[in-house]
Image (cartoon, rainbow, N blue to C red; front, side):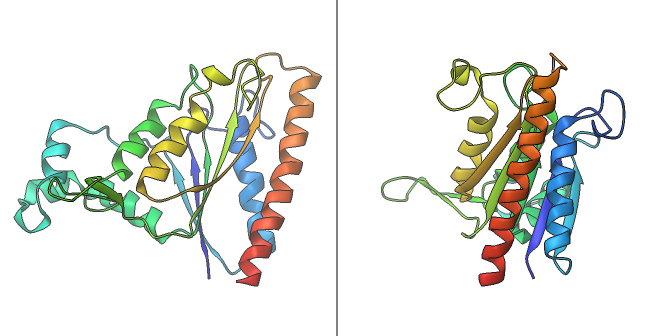
Length: 226
């Protein structure tokens, strides 16, 4: 049965439909995960909260360990990479990844950037060989995975073809590294108007939840057909 990897990256601990000042992105990811479970109750769902429990940022020791061949690693190197190994294993085991990633200052939260830095890993999710003809790197993540990003934005107009699209570094900042390691199917849904907290926010949330429901129906239907 397929595995869904559910990731939350908001610094806010609660959902906006349950707690005052809660996270809209957590609300959206919960809607997605609940709909998925309802449609496919036998599937495995793995939850990872990088917003409240962020991975350690990459350090010089981490880089040293990651670029040391597996057979040559010292015990401290394996310990340095242990958290990264866990995150990579979760990603590789997943068929569908839903990542709730709010916009912070036009990009992804630092917690989610640390997650990306831990999973974009030489020898695990991408290969690199200076002596390889042509491009010296290649993706190592098996094909067939689907990534869904659910975001929230304080302002509005960051979507494709809209006035602030050039300032939106959330979806591009996720799509680029994920495609680099081999995950190329990506769907994005976002809520806007958070800072206005008016009827436009309410309408944006309602529209996003409908879009999520439609996307889950499409993806679960495809899984059933497979």
